[in-house]
Length: 369
Image (cartoon, rainbow, N blue to C red; front, top):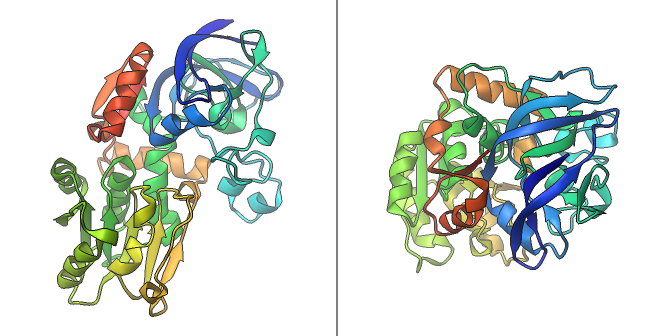
């Protein structure tokens, strides 16, 4: 079958064109995409040096399944998940499903994507196989994915647009608090950057009953949204504040000169990679959430004393556990999703979605099919 999709050309540009999908093989599922979230990684993938079917967040409806698929039938509503565990490799057996050594498209490195793990079969563009971004390629009317890339959407209240954003930004932020940092009730937390990921760090801290949540951003409008999502204090930072050291002084003032128990970096700005270390108390925890991969220089004095710095991937996602938990929190009114979606777009307005994201206009933009 043919369907319309967004194709990254590898040189920073993309086009909307048609791709051809085969029928699902033994363990594959054909999904009609209803909505796909947009994040900075999608824009980065335009420059991966090769054609790629764009998109790695999404939700839709199963339309066909391979003969060995047992967990899904046509008509099922599903969420897409890019960290697909094999459940049999070394890391999966340790419980690190997000670090699967067989299926993970990021663990082996290389521009956030590993060509050696790409599934090329079944998706064709210009009569040649094309890689699917993070083995999904959700910016397409239909996708062909492994059944391990899907989680059932069991909710009568959650819309497809809201469901589509769970599979990256929401999971990364929420999971970095709940799974990775294991933030404790009554703790203080700093969140540096209040875009889509930062807002979900705030939500995770609120859900885990943090006593103080300090949001830091250079955008006053985003700080207003941070309050809505659970921030108890806000700091409007200056672009001239190198390493956010002045903001760190304000954090110390708010925390009896001690520093916060936890600090989460959510900006993806390399110059701020060490900033959370300046925000935390001795023996506190700094969490690098945004996936900075560039080389940075860190003043080791910032580690004094007994501070912990971690760099979790994808909120240490366990898709079949965490996605249903997030949906249940939404159903109970404890986790906001609809409020995070600033704008929606048709596929042919993808350029507008990228522009709005890069300008900081959107907390989250979603393509609607």
